[in-house]
Amino acid sequence: MKETLLFTVIFPIIIDYLDDYIHSIIAQTDQRFDWLIINDGIKDYHIREKFPSNVIWKDVNENYKPAELRYLGSKYALANNYEILIFADGDDYFTHNRIELTKKYLMTNDFVFNELYLVDETGIELQPNVLQRIFPNSNIDSINMLLDNNIVGLSNSALNLTCIDNIYMPKEIIAVDWWLYSVLVLNGKKGELCPSAITYYRQTGNNTVGMWTPLTSIRLFKGIEVKKIHFHHLKEYAATYMKNNAYYRIFDKKYGEMLILEEALQRKEFCTRYTRVINNNFDQIYKGWWSEILPLEQWRQYAE
Image (cartoon, rainbow, N blue to C red; front, side):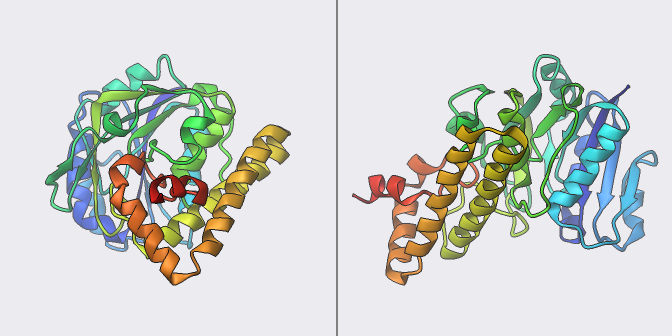
């Protein structure tokens, strides 16, 4: 078997950040890995000159959705018998020990996720040690830890493929990382936080959601849509693939909570109040991606 594949999707709006990404990969203390780039729409083929000559380069000529692109890379890793798949976003960059420590942690885990530092578009640090601040544990071994929010992104995580036969990913999924690791945990896989390797997570307008960002009405309705799609497919997965009625009921309840919230927010005055309450209590509420999209019952605890 081949050992390690580093996988990244690149696209036109992240071109200005690629140099930081590339330099941090070239400087990794462990260079024993293959490097797969899926190019989603960058027409300037001089961009290839920035990468080492041995990079595996695949151009995408169709209008793929984000989930489909990540599935392509994951499928490539499985088909070519890699033992480890490391995800990395092209607008982020990493400490030079990330690959080395990832391999070490995957010797005893099904997946690993490393620490996040938030940086702005120019690389200036905004927030260090994000996960150690919002995540009280060092391991993920229950779906309850990923039920209402996510902390395992596709720029700070990696998989031990020796324990995975297949990766199922509906193309409609928006929060690809949240879906992937939720399904893995549902199937008994466990992950561990690696605090000594860091992903410098760049906060730009290109992020699907960003991190530690105040809630607006646009972000609110986007988050509801993400959660509706996520829970809908999880309940279908639980019923169809797992034949597990208990999990189906859990995800069906979460899906219903989003429908109720969406209906309540149609009243402009309430939408304004909902958003204000979330932002006034943001430091208490925020526990990772999508955590600020609270069901009404939880929201009322802060509104009283």
